[in-house]
Amino acid sequence: MELILLLFTFTLAVFLGTELISKVPSQLHTPLMSGSNAISGITIVGALIGVSQVAGEQAGKWFAFAALVLATINVVGGYVVTDRMLAMFKKKN
Image 1 (cartoon, rainbow, N blue to C red):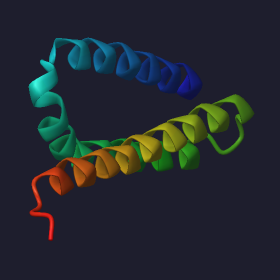
Image 2: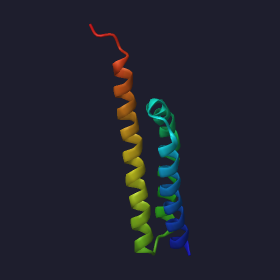
Image 3: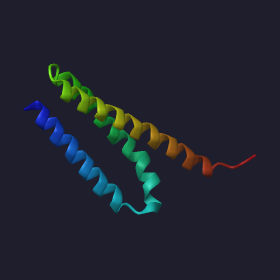
C-alpha cells in the first residue's frame, strides 16, 4: 500500500510540475525558479521520509531515492541559474 501511495505521489508531482512549468512565460521563469528552490526542499524532505517509511520494500526505496536525486538536481540547478542571472546585472570592472 505504501508503494502505491509513493508511486501515486511521484506521478502526480511529475504531471503537475510539467503543467505548471509549461504555463509560465519565459520572462518569469528564472525569477520564479529562485523562489521555487525552497519549495523543492520540501520534496527532498518528503523523499527522505519516503525512504524511511518503506524499510522492507526495495522498489519503494528506489522510487524514493529517485525523488531525492531529482529534487536535489532541481534545487542545485535552480541556484546555479539564479546565480548566472544575477551575475548579468553586476557591473563589470
